Image (cartoon, rainbow, N blue to C red; front, top):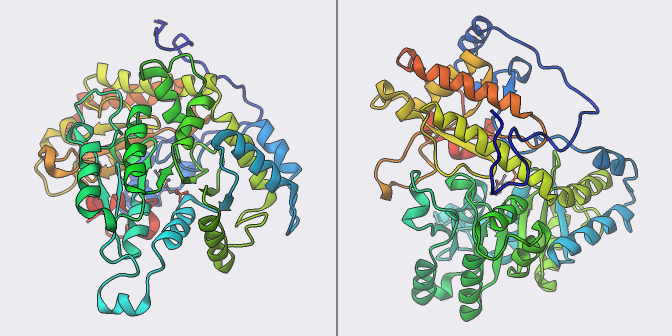
Length: 478
Ligand SMILES: *Cc1c(COP(=O)(O)O)cnc(C)c1O
């Protein structure tokens, strides 16, 4: 039954604020076919052909649909080596959104992270690596609310320590708090007081991917900024989901409801000295990343490092002009409140449908995904050495043709007791309709009634870090 949610401008069911111009058929498979595929691919969901997946919720990274405006902008992509008009259009768009004019495009977010770390901390040094210490960053600590795993690896490869400073409440999956991405400011202050000289810069990940896409409040960002000012530290955003974070602020933070997502995003960037981001998320593109550094000298240094392995910053970084055009348009479209509110409503609706059906999820649902507690779903597998999340993800695929990701128990640290073993349903942008997600929710709720029949599944022996989007899978597939 349609009902309206007072916090949202669109009533349920949340219909998409776009219509289809091109469609891609979904190949319908049977449970029997999918069972055979699972068996013949060693129960490794990453090996299954995407054509045998009916609804693919493996990741929200690079899997979204581009708009007609993005596709038409691509046609005017200027591929000149120097002086490209496409680069200038990207700079103009980013200046409006972020206020930062020093733009270095990269082919993914992790390249922006590598250049950030190499620019500020230095490159891993082969001699030091041989001696067992990793590199130039020995003894340094980079705090963050929670590092995404590529960021952590990049920092640790540079020899520094990547430190997460989420408070306990941010790590408790049952806590319904509005800003579970907020950094523990007291812990940051303590770190800066005791080890200040060892902190080259401070990071904030918006939204915080590692605890489930949870937002960071403006109040928290201001408090972190104040500490950075007091101790003379740059503040760098991991801004992959900056638009979703801005939307949550407009919905949840006192005094913010009448502001546009663009105005809030601008305030977030104004509080920072720069940002590294993937444009495969809120850039609404299938490729790309950005490194934005306010400081001219740091920007130049990053550009000099970029030219060695990526390309010429003064006007393309490491992307074709046509992709710069798509990013420029996508970054602006991502701040459209109608798009943002429909996306949030659709994901909340998915989480609510699962919870109403008795499926326990991480609360509140995040900006890009819903996380199911696999041990609660499959109590008979909760003590087995095999991972319940892996067995559940295989069962959901076999049963419904819906592919999701067994995340394992890496999202939450052990301070809160036994970490939940999670299955993630990540929602690609502008790709699936509410009815696709209703089908997914109904199938999973129905599967729950037969949960005791879910078989433990052998962990794939052939799944290594190179095949996954993130090393988050490692613990689940040990
Ligand atoms: C995806 C992601 C990255 C890395 O971006 P890629 O484009 O995949 O290299 C970094 N940080 C966060 C928070 C992410 O979600």
